[in-house]
Amino acid sequence: MGLRILLINHNPMNLSENNGRTLRNLLSDVDAESVSHLFFHDGEIDAPFCNSFYEITDFDIRHSLAYFKKAGNVVNPSNEKRHDDTSKYIKHCDKKPFTRFLRDVAWGFNTWKSKKLKEWLTEQKPNVIFFYGSDSVFCHKIAHWVKKYLKIPMLIYWVDDFYLSLSNGQKGLFSFINKTRFKRIAKKNILDSKNICITPKMADAYKKVFKKEFDVLFNSSFLTSFASKEVSNPIKMSYLGNIGLGRCESLLKIGSIINEFNLPIQLSVYSGEQRQCLLDKIKSGNGLQFLGKVSYEKVLNIMETSDILVHVEDFSEKNINACRYSLSTKIADCLASNRCLFCYGPSEVASIDYLKNNNGALVATNEDELKEILSSIVKDKELIKNTAKAGVSLFEKNHISKNNSLRLRDFLLCLIDEKK
Image (tube, rainbow, N blue to C red):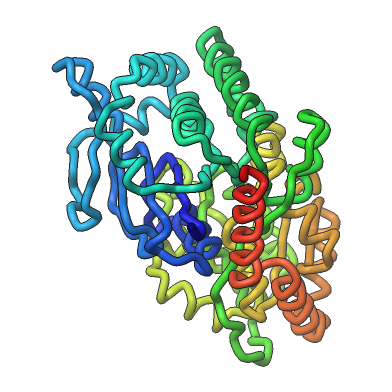
């Protein structure tokens, strides 16, 4: 029997979302007929690399408890809208420690452990589990049960740090209970599985805690490098992405320095942000313009016509802890683009640390460095071109989809061989 993968993830795969694209890139060298997908959240499915889907949602769990039934079903990807209220419920649960606790209690009745699920798992005949690391207790419990039921090895891919980080600044009894319960089941899975992390910083930290090896597999990109271009006047600088987690503040700081020194730089910010408090703040900033949400096709055009692509992180302790070990999903695309990548943020954050240590971008880790770099790119256009070339070199070293997909395949095949 060849490689047959059971992909376990909280959300259904969707190529319009960051996690979906990350997994698409990693599984690009795997036959779609050999991948089945178990997930726990209602939503649109767009996963051409999977052949069969089994869904268990909060709606299913609540319904099963109310009517004394089992939860979960095999689903068809074309049936996009399967429940009505789950997304709103999940959003609420994710924010409140008490409702998150109640959610795990509800899943703890194990109504998902059904004959139907066992039959589906047996029918799929997976010989390895690829678990996309989650911060949910019930996700880890189900992954652990499936591993024991099928008697097959599991590989966990950690793209965010859920184990070492603080509880997003949340305090109180239920936050403590949630974190304690999560650490107990996550530790069990970590010690009993193969683990890979998205950054060396995370792998090193986890290695120290668990006294075992953690490999590194960077996020990837299919993007083809754009042709080189002459630097515009004014210099065209673009930020594309989330302005939450304090990133708005760092963008405003860049804009204020551009404005203060009257630098010939045009900073454009593109984001689908909906929170009015952040929109009011970013729109009031000097030295930048906020242009809202754009399609993925438009994103590619903006990247191609830009001179510099911007990545920022916040300097507050809370947001440093939230992003300390993660690598932004857009970094691989930025490096591949053949456009200069400019980053502003604290060196404690893995994205900033990685790019600075590997000379893949112009990196400012404080306000003085920010002023110096902005001044330098105005005076020296070759700095922009040379940094773009350095970014492509780093992309070719660590972020080519084909290479990383083959590495993942090798990891999985080694696990299967070890189990024999």
